[in-house]
Image (cartoon, rainbow, N blue to C red; front, top):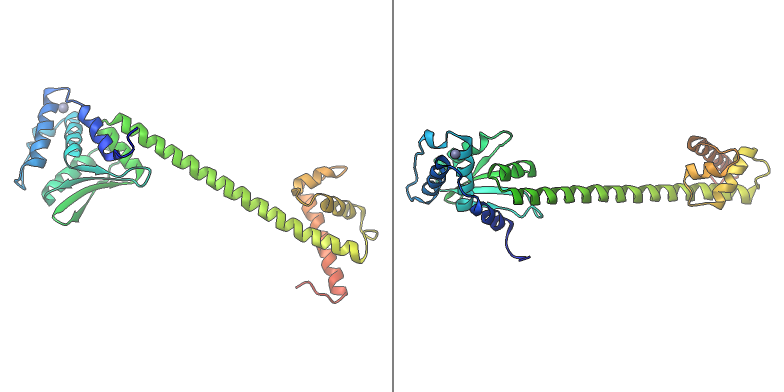
Length: 247
Ligand SMILES: [Zn+2]
């Protein structure tokens, strides 16, 4: 695949191969050429010529081939048609916005008036309006890939955050349990707390659910959480008593 053909050029190549299928569409295509290539700044197109939807599609297709550019969707979503006057830009904008969901805008750039579209939804729709079906699918693929990539990143980040949270919680719990063990031993602890203390030390990387499953009988996540909290409170009370104060 030739790497240096821009997305814009690819769309133009594709649109160039779409030929008007009827006489009225052919007239609309010819009108687009006059509209964009005649030096005259004002050029009025008779309403009759663009009355039909197929003709408006054809007109926009030709307009893009002559005066359009599009950003590479891998980089950003931007579509524009470069018009020589405000009146012409306004006219093009109205034709685009007659299609459902379209919200073309105009911005002045030097001597030109640029009709533009932002956002992948509108740009994908615009490719559809112009009947650039290959580019349409290519852009959809890019969109899907981007969204999968984003979701994947979110999941990965979220997992990493959860693991970090589990690890730091486990470290705090382990510290508290070791403190109890070294200062008083587990003998004074209620059996339920002693058991959870033992499995926590044995499996420092296990989640609360996994710890609960190590107990006999098994204990649910909230039960495990409750017991570990009790142990931490116990350790805090011991530290206080010994004047070591926990924060
Ligand atoms: Zn037509």
